[in-house]
Amino acid sequence: MIWKPKKDLTRYYNCYNFCMFFLGGSIFCVSFFLFMNPTASLTFIKANNCQVIGQQKNYIEQAEKYSILYINFEYQGKQFLGQACSSDLNQSDVFDGLGPYKFYYKHDQISCGSEDESFKQHSKNRIFQEDQKNEANENYRFLGADIGDDADIDEGESIDRGLLCKKDYLWSNVKIASWLCLPNNFNIADYMEPQSCFVNFFEGERAFQSGIDRAPMRDQNNFPLISYEQQAYYPKTHLICIIIFTYYNWILSLNTIFQYTSNAILKILQKNKLLIG
Ligand SMILES: *[C@@H]1O[C@H](CO)[C@@H](O)[C@H](O)[C@H]1NC(C)=O
Image (cartoon, rainbow, N blue to C red; front, side, top):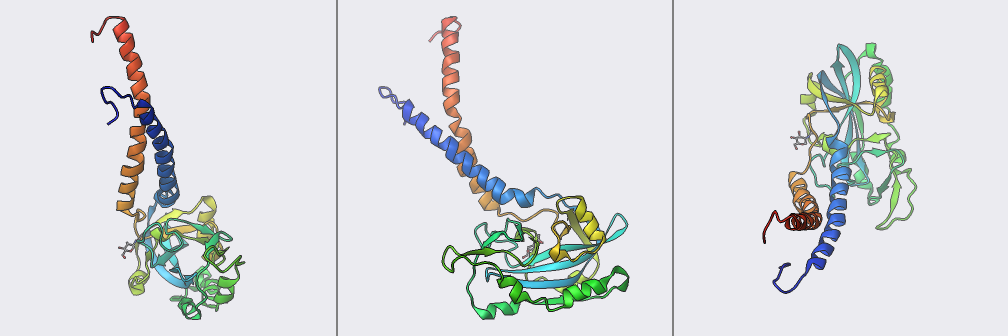
């Protein structure tokens, strides 16, 4: 289409490539680093004797059924308390719910859900096991107390109840990305039995300490993050589409550079009579 015998459309070709270079490149970078990287970049190490000992449920803005799971586990011969999660969006698309790829921190903006009261019934807390030695009393109080959920959940400043309504996320210090969660309908009895799991000391040294101290996980920024899969879920077809339609186009757009450099090289070769043609 471009190189017709009598018509030079190189300018359009370059123009197209120029657009593709920026469009393809930026869409690829955004999708890759925004959607895939937060979960895919975490490395998980195997841990033993992982047991669910508590659960706190919330229906976050009527968009996601999310639970914090309290996990007892053993790592390098020491006992820790860690945090896992379950979510009905553990294998959902990028654009579902609040964004299953994303870690939310306290006061991050989330879109408001509907005000339907019946949704709030999802919120509850339970504890399964007491362990006096490990200050479980502390945890029991924390987990078992009726943690004024509703007040907590709805405290966020709503700016406007409309399509663009945003409010602060307040329910926990960190909401784990849903792609790292167990499914919402997991059989809790199975996970109360000791088994192996994977741990990432979320964002550094302090995670190790809060795990040993058995700090209340909902109020931690750094904690042992537990997953039952070594690798986070990601939507494979999405990733393939991103690669084909943005990354591949981006690479092709570099043709413009090669067109000029190869022409220049050809000219030099012709000058030196190394090539007849
Ligand atoms: C997400 O849920 C599916 C089943 O619905 C499960 O097989 C998978 O292991 C879960 N992902 C994680 C990270 O646990």
